[in-house]
Image (tube, one colour):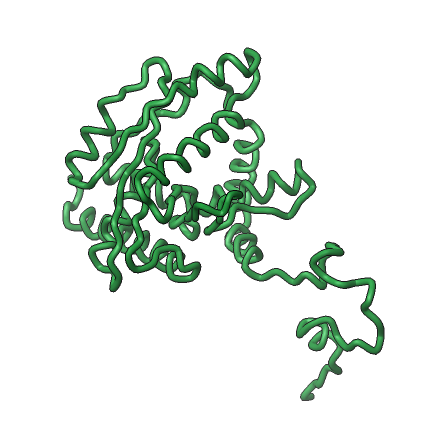
Length: 283
């Protein structure tokens, strides 16, 4: 028989860890400010459920005041259990809005059979959520992307797009009207998987539309998990590199003025200064 006290302790420990990581990301990137109305996008997956739960807890402890409104986009996929999210959100007792748009029909009409639908589906969702945010008066739009999502995006852009480009924790929309935040940016996916099991979230699968899985992203996910297993610390180091950019040691002509760099202009940066200093040995 399992020790219920031990289980409760482990659950509370994970809860605190998630709140600490999310809270630190919010502070580091100034994601939420006093008076904000945060539109929390809830898809029915483990990540968005956890994000909503964490934000509710952080709001109770935060030294600032902000409001939350949960929003779900019902895309009219066949077999979508439309009663699950409203029932769950009612029990939480927070304001929510269910936006019904038949994006499923649009995707099926435009994308040839057998081709992945994720790209178009994502763009359609984004446009609708921006509009809903404006209608609800939301000042921030919270998405449930976590640390692993950010790293997978980085690797996909490097391997398939020829860019060193990730997924920012805070982003202004192209029209400048919306601020998108990702409070789970510091949270590893494995924590969210465990938390979802503990909380018994009513998960709604994302395969109801019958689309193919995003094979490239799944390959990046498998690569990261293999690294984490074989080389402990490598994934954390990779993530840390996103916060420690040295433009003078890359090759982007727009980010660093290589053309006007001469021997009289001095070292590029602190790293260069350190690397060329004579080594003193105390023998």
